[in-house]
Length: 349
Image (cartoon, rainbow, N blue to C red):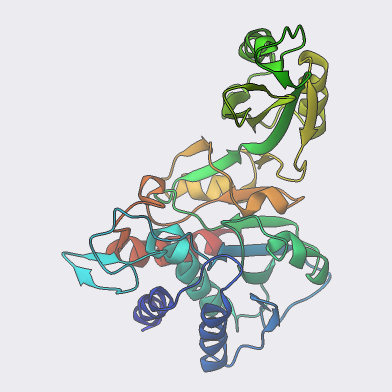
């Protein structure tokens, strides 16, 4: 019954638009789940959280988290993104795979353990908002209101394999300055003519520390913008550099390397989206391996970036389906996900 209720919850969530920053209706539906199981909960904006019945501040806390916001549906959809149809074992709908399946599976797992006494860990369940946009009212906004977290499971589609490391992200705005002028006149300070040297420097950026799980730091130039008229030399060239950071570097270290390597103005948009990891010898990881799952390093970003504790990314669904047209998750993946989460926690609780 718990599993069937979780699938029904996911179908209800799919029916409700829940774009980042506008998840109020899905937050209310999640509240209804906790109320139906007589589980006290709290809400801050569109973030919902609850603790197990016998929470003991003397015990370490295991954090269970996934998000209930979605991206906007892309133009490739041929199905109604808000119609949670089940066909050939697939549950379709926007947010079904990313990360509705993981969310309802974790909520079901938390509900399973809610009343149990004498657990070795407290349980803290959070259904968070604004993950897709890394918004101001996302998980990091909620952290100061929560009990101390010792270890975390963040629910994202991983095919139930154990993502024991995750790359961080720093986005840099680069500005190459020059002197504006009419194109007909001489100009020895045209910023566009300085661009080849800067592009070469970006291509030759070196980050010596290579992670065995996440590989090297990856810096990618993703945007270049300059000029507005054919007869005007622009005063600057603006660029965006996307840097995916392994766990060998802090974001501050990455910022220092970029600033010292590039001859232009460099401004990091944020240094808060850190890389994440958990020791492969952690009991949670060992338990997952015992249950037959493999470990790997994830290149994609999640709410782990806002945590300061060891964290494991784990959930039903396949990351390659995320943000795709006609998004879906297999019903069996949810069923197996709930069972796996419960079996995993049974080994450490």
